[in-house]
Length: 333
Figure 1 (tube, rainbow, N blue to C red):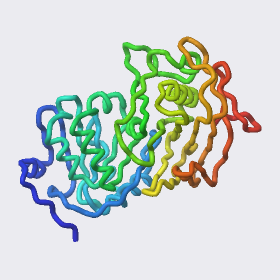
Figure 2: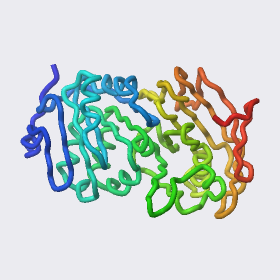
Figure 3: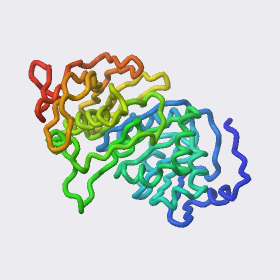
């Protein structure tokens, strides 16, 4: 039987309520109103966006071992609560909306996070997560969660923040269209290429950037531009990427061994072998010999050895802003 947690904090009283408001954050909970402590197991669920993947959520729930499942988001409502509760046998499912910097600095918010056995980041705009939560008790609480061997997951923007390197800028109506592959390939320094690092510290996801909606939204070109910029920034000589398509997920065990699931085009594991030949403002990118592995559903990939099975290895290059592939049909996806 799980052991109930003791509270010496006023948060205990707040958690007895179905909905908690303190200033601007929102906490909505289903299930047992009292927390429990179980023994979760580590793992990372990397979901590429689109429709929800039952298999990936059930995997996260299993890792939580019947404990308390927390959805973190910067905007939105409790849409996930009933969905997760219907899939899994858990003590509780709750959503915590932390919509600004002020809320992220509230100690009660971090206290809620620290009582979760599993954390899942919803989609949206990853710049809000980074800009509002960085260097705050929220960031500390999530990183402590990971360090304690508890599971973490995320979809779309919630996937984009999981790697050491992060593309932080999403569409702002005042800034023009979403960042496209064509825009980055022609100018890897154009103003929307905003990169950050060291938000989350997931050991198996160091030295890499993550991306979602990959093949569906044709994000390969911009991802290669991000890798080139990471090298040019002096952050890494050989950065890597895990890019997941819509309706697909990569489920990473504590030992770094991953499985691709879902009904989308799977996942892409990319590694820069050499620095870019040409990567400067207002000039098309040239960046050759990027080792690429496409893992469809059912494929396996070891993040430690950076090798896979059940998929296909090939090489990508960018020449004067044009992506080329070593595949016989020259397909990049």
